[in-house]
Amino acid sequence: QVQLVESGGGLVQAGGSLTLSCAASGSTFTIARIGWYRPAPGNPRELVAAINSDGSTNYAESVKGRFTISRDNPKNTVYLQMNSLKLGDTAVYYCSAHSIVSRSSRYDYWGQGTQVTVSS
Image (cartoon, rainbow, N blue to C red; front, side, top):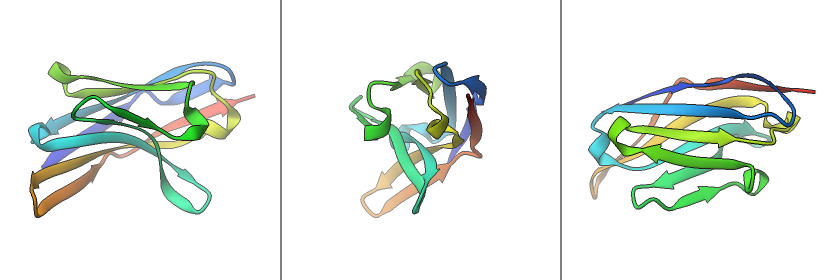
């Protein structure tokens, strides 16, 4: 099993920056991918950014150039650096880990979420 704990959310003015952290514990060696998600119209969990075990990254079009996902392997922590925040970035952000134990055993784990509020 994998446990995820998010932190770093808060209130920030538009144009400001915030960094979210997702600390993983447990069977972290099984994690193939960690991503940040947030609710969007018609999608309860829209991918914001993800980082794969090979270091490759994916971003939603709406955050490209503004958000950066990175990881600290010794700390088993993934970060989401959010710059130039917009009102539309206001949401609860969830960290999720995709774990591969075997070809037939794959699991998705979720953190409790952290609130990001962008004010004008």
